[in-house]
Length: 159
Image 1 (cartoon, rainbow, N blue to C red):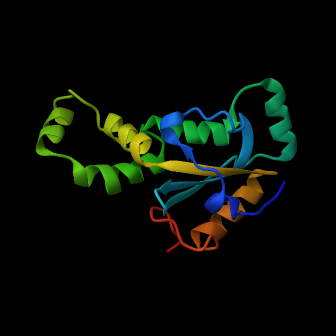
Image 2: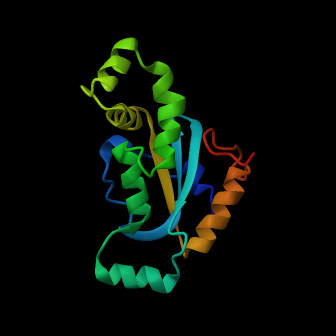
């Protein structure tokens, strides 16, 4: 596998509004970058504990794992268990809420998560790359958070 992280800055973009995206492997460890237009918003990884053997075993089982599941969680807009959706909610959605929307959320006419999902689908895209294992993905994610992609991500940079 190629560990050329430039793909995360210049490779094909995929819209969250088009989820699921056929080119995202159903079983893979790897990285993904999230973009709002040309702004680098977030870097993430999936498959932290995955070895090449574990990935092959999961492929044989035929159940999704890793990148596919992580990107699906982000596309859902649900904040429960998803740090990225929390960031989007706090930084992008919350400041734009109207008094009427806040009232509707408090009365349970609408959910905050539905507004997060709408924002993700309307404004964000992603790029991804597979890695041979989770250890490689974790290492590359740390490097990118520190700026190795040419800029640090807005929502989760290394301090």
